[in-house]
Image (cartoon, rainbow, N blue to C red; front, side, top):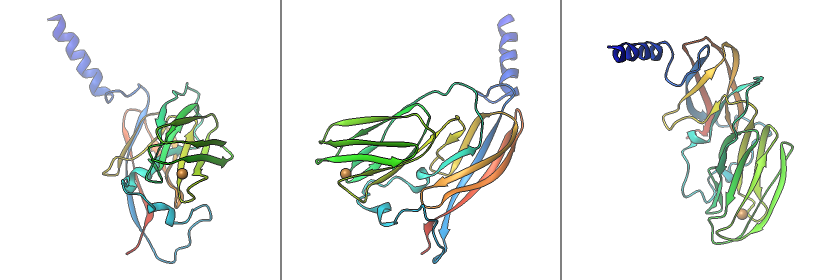
Length: 226
Ligand SMILES: [Cu+2]
């Protein structure tokens, strides 16, 4: 009988807040749609030439997975958990081409091609050069400053990748269907961003309340109109 009561109490607790949700916080449940870009629409100056997008990209990552969703201008006082992710050099391209990490995380750059690469960045958030290294080898870089890091290769000028380094945990990459969730967001008024390397930041505002999901829809004009 006692076990049954305890079980009931657990169920009630689970109903009060979604599983894994910290008490007193809310969440953002959103959707990203990629829409055609009207021909003749000027690109912002930070966009790089589109020839880099598909060059040698035989194992193309679906474009929605090159979008990063995050909250902007958030002051986060908690401890950031660093992660370790990999960007392979494969068929003369970086795979994946876009990653998002917290400050303090490390990115491995394994060379999966049968020839040399030389990975580097001149970005203000991280300037580094991993030097020439042969097939099968990997080098890594730790990112200690928040910001956008554009990564290139000295040997293959068409190669480029973007690393978004964030100093809070409120970011994600959408699922293949465009859906995303940002859990454990403290109540408040936020600017949410859908970022893509060709258009930069697209923003909208969202109010988060404790114990309930807020919804966000982002339409990003990144695809070439037919
Ligand atoms: Cu290269």
